[in-house]
Image 1: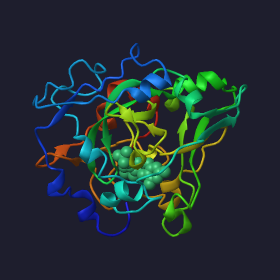
Image 2: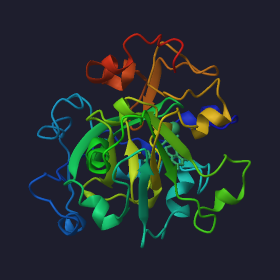
Image 3: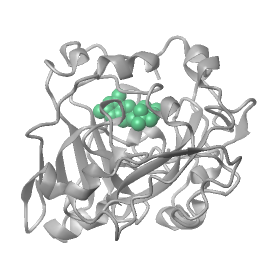
Image 4: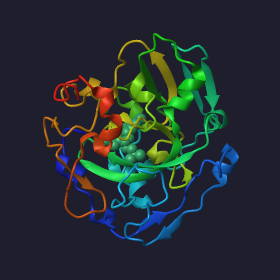
Length: 317
Ligand SMILES: Nc1nc2c(c(=O)[nH]1)N[C@H]1C(S)=C(S)[C@@H](COP(=O)(O)O)O[C@H]1N2
Ligand SMILES: [Mo]
């Protein structure tokens, strides 16, 4: 997303090419991991070479059976997390040792039951479910990621939004001592903020991820809580959330503030609207040779297109 080096940013390095190692298991079944304690202990990951059968038995209809889960080492070593560094290969090292002790998530605004959650309270909102989702960055690379988490709706139901609440605003922790790039306002306007229309937030596909590959979410992927909205470009998936506010007006969002012609509020994966500097028709799936076609709404159109009925998708992006 930075103005320079686009080619290198969207070209995966040889190191990420691995076409056969896929993962089975790590399934956080609702019944098996009902508590935060059980969840933290759940770290079994079963590495197998199945050439495509791996996704059977996971959340139905979420990802096509011919798509393989991206290897964990790629998901955890090729990241966008500008608070640490703008170098995708450097986030893992820069975020090592990031502590989430004492983390709080403040939920308020236009709600009848505002509440500040500690992590145990937050994780106890609902048992983690495994959700294998496509992840499509606006820079035209993609992955298939086995998140664990629960629907945003479950949190919103808990705080009881008022009728006047039309949008949900999200905010990342501001702490330059832990996020070194937050000392530099030239990188981005901090803290990172994002937002959804409330009906988008209530859609069952929108989740808070607290886990990845059956383990706790690692720092580089947005520990302890990351928003995942799989029909939208990756930048909507704000990491390390500390604040969630129900509001009546469309909230500002970080990349839209930075370059409004390039990054819309909606950020839907939209093959009808190219980025002004590159095509959105195809993508580089990390671990594959050659490019594949990008799907409208990232392949989730049958589930989410009705949210945008009547909107001109060439205009709203
Ligand atoms: N706070 C914060 N959230 C963020 C970002 C960021 O730089 N800071 N980058 C976004 C972008 S552009 C992408 S593609 C995804 C990457 O998530 P991943 O590293 O878990 O794949 O996180 C998004 N969330
Ligand atoms: Mo991204």
